[in-house]
Length: 181
Image (cartoon, rainbow, N blue to C red; front, side):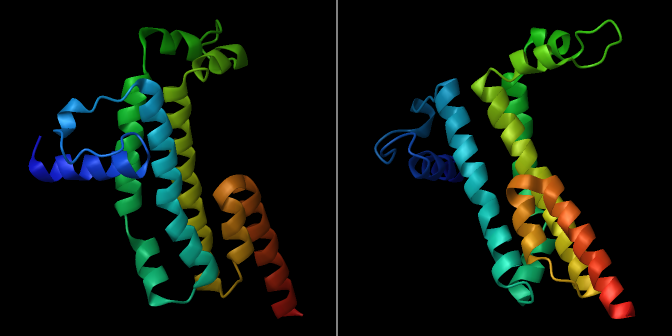
């Protein structure tokens, strides 16, 4: 592992509370259990998206906001993190749990069993964060393009994405209606 990678992982581990200090040890000596890794990634992912939401809500017209929401970096980083967690959580049993029915459709008991693993839950959380942030970005862009207030919709997208999209559609319809009146 290169020196820069070791330093980056050290910072991540220290910031998320996995280890107290890695400055005296090689990072390859720091081994996280599955539960620690899942917890750390959960926290790191959650914190990583907050600056984007904060900018879209508190400073929607700022150049910094417009530049940051144009960036693909959070999607690439979180996408890679998601792929890694998915890889770690995948077992030979996973496909059988997902496609348990004779029609090869997911069934709730199989999905519930699959999500009983912390690693699988952490990967699902990262998946939700990425999709929610992407939807919030789309709402934000649509609001800028159509001169519609989006702060409330972007805020809802953070935790209740479908409600954020719904409120944006309602706001957009009401705004059009009032402009046409």
